[in-house]
Length: 182
Image (tube, rainbow, N blue to C red; front, side):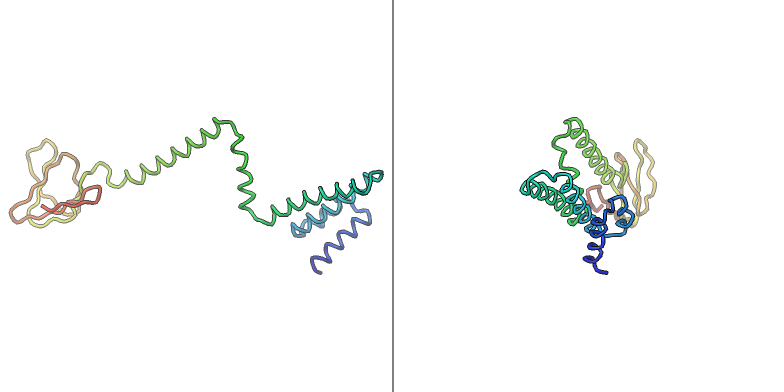
């Protein structure tokens, strides 16, 4: 059966006096568009039966309003999830200021924390990384007079001192990516 045949079957059942409650179990598997069309037909039938004394022009006006409402609902379904999601946020300008301000403050806090974590966790409290060392390269800890040999791939903290011997060579890389050769 085609979509049109299925729709015609549902419309005939409505004409035979079936209620929407009776049709609902059969409409569960039907496409959303067909469900909207059957509900529209049922609403039009109910409105025509409820207003037999009204003029034809008034009934037609009411039916046009119903059809426009159902068309808008069907169009929203046809557009997909993104427009429906955006429609849910359309009332933000009517929310109390403290809710919008709180949401903005929370978002700003998340961005700041993420930036600090991204930039700050790289080397901890190290100021310089020793990338390359050849020959005699020594380091003295903060406030110590003793020098100890230093190997490649070491991190140096603020206040530590480094020296090279006559045949020594060291390349230091700072946190910002700049390098210095000793």
